Length: 220
Image 1 (cartoon, rainbow, N blue to C red):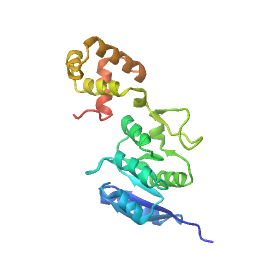
Image 2: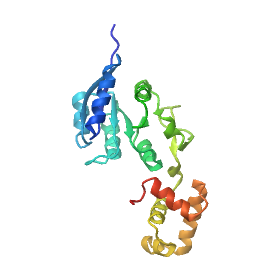
Image 3: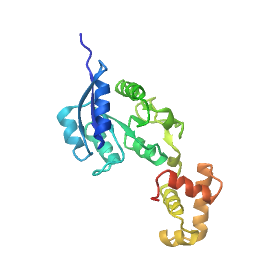
Image 4: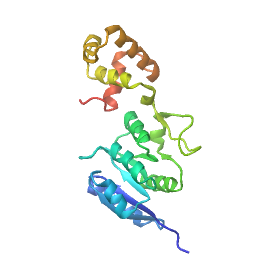
C-alpha cells in the first residue's frame, strides 16, 4: 500500500526560494509540493482548495500579517499545521508564531534536510523548532496538545506595557518622554525598566536599546 504523502503549501514572495524547496521536496517519496502563494492574502481559500497538511509561511511579506493569517488558518482549517520559515530568528517573532498556533519555526539559513525533517515531525504530531530558535527560548510548563509543549520566547515574560516601554526605550526616548507618551509618571517608567532588565537579564539601558533594535522592535 502506498503511503499517503505529506502535502505542502509554500507562502513566500521569494520565488527562487520556493522553487528550490519545491525541487527538494520532489526528491522525497513522502513529500508533495502542491503550490505556493506570494502573500498570505488568500491563504484560507487556497488551503481549502488544495488541502495541505503543512503550510510553510514566511514572515516578511507584503499584504496580510502572517501571524494573523496563521491564527485564522488554525481556527478555520485546524487540520492544517503551520511552520514559519523566516530569514529572521527574533524573540518577538518566535513569540508571535507560538501564539498564532505554529507547530514549527525554522531559519531560511537552515540546511534543506533540517527543514525536511521538521516537516515530517510536525506531520507526525510533534513540534519542530530549529536549534537556533530553541537556543533563544526557555522551557515552558503546560501547553496545548497534551504533553506537546512549544518553547516560549523571552519576550513572553514581559507584559504588554513592558513591551511598549521597551520599544520606546529602543527608539532612544528618555524616561520623561516615555512617561508623557504613555501618560504615566517617570517613577512608573523606572519601575517598568527595572522589571524589564530583570526579566531579560539585561543590566543597563544601552543593552536594552541594542536588544530592542536587534529584535526588530524598532526601525533603524
